[in-house]
Length: 297
Image (tube, rainbow, N blue to C red; front, side):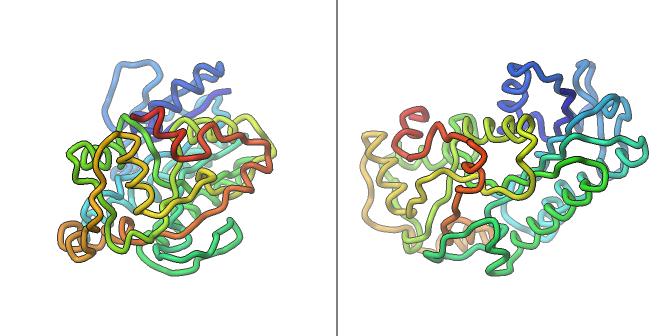
């Protein structure tokens, strides 16, 4: 299958390209830098430029592009987070329609914060809808709407509402691991907020399954079986690393001072359910945190 990926040089994208190629798919990457690599094609979302050769005999698009949410959310950076996800999807749609391309599938990243950034024992399913409106809720809602327009030109549209991705290569985990390695690992805020997570191998496998299983269609929570509180997550990480765990939580005001509005994704968290993706036969390699840590530490 001929697959075009945005965000193909990012944390998830790099691993996904390798996995898709191992499954004998032909993978093309959209890049913001001009390259002589035969599988890389240039695009510039701000200028609405894209190499039309990327769309030749295309079967599937996987849309992973998006500015990192773990930066301080200034007004300008909020615009960048929005544009990098939504404007880029709109550009892809416009070019597909222009070239009269019909896709077998359009698969887009989304975020588990679609439901809202809050702490609750409520278990959220794909049918829960938006529970609490905030910036990330609106961002994810617009992201998924941009994906949904592809239903006009694609047999399937899939959105994976992704939790914190655990990987040695980047993302949040190396930063959390560093605090533990310095023997200053501790919970933050109340420590009672839930932490949804997924091992990068499982997330990559989920994308490959979404490409290859035509029954997968719609929205799916990309989260592991075990949802754990922040304090228990950090305790397990310290134990797995053979390091100390500080019983004193980092106060909320410290995070708010350092990170501003972005601190909400650290200080709040609810629980999400993964039964829908498992109903299609998807098997998690790392259902529990202890198993995940064995591969990461």
